[in-house]
Length: 164
Image (cartoon, rainbow, N blue to C red; front, side, top):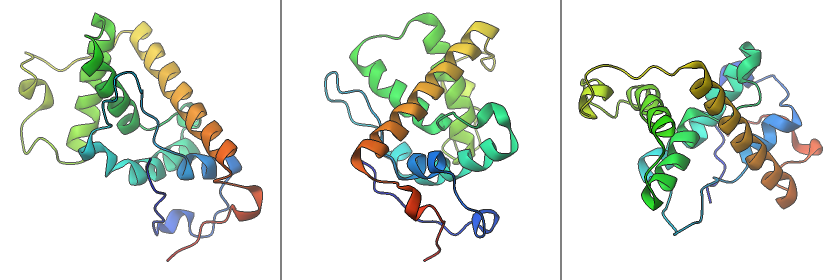
């Protein structure tokens, strides 16, 4: 489980977090428990900041408001892919997420992700794959928030962002 991290972000300093945002920020790291593969450490370490960035994206883009971060989505799919091969569409979604996430956190040191993966060109998602990814990220966000609600990690009385 991921410990919540408080970050100083000027954009949210005077803002009041919604209950949904607070539950998401304080919620547990969700990973499948099929055969016990752990969420990748390299991604685990960036999830707290990725969640803050996702909250900011959700405030400026209505389509992102109820979605989990791409970092959490690729981490979850990484665990799933170790149990069994992903179907073709989900493999492309997985590679697409890698193209989005790894450069963001400087994980590919100057190379393109598709080249590192052995692909001739970047992966682009067709409409059905994009819709599947959006539904998956929405499910993941809902699961995180529901787990936070059940565990009492975020309540209405403590929904103001505080700085250390």
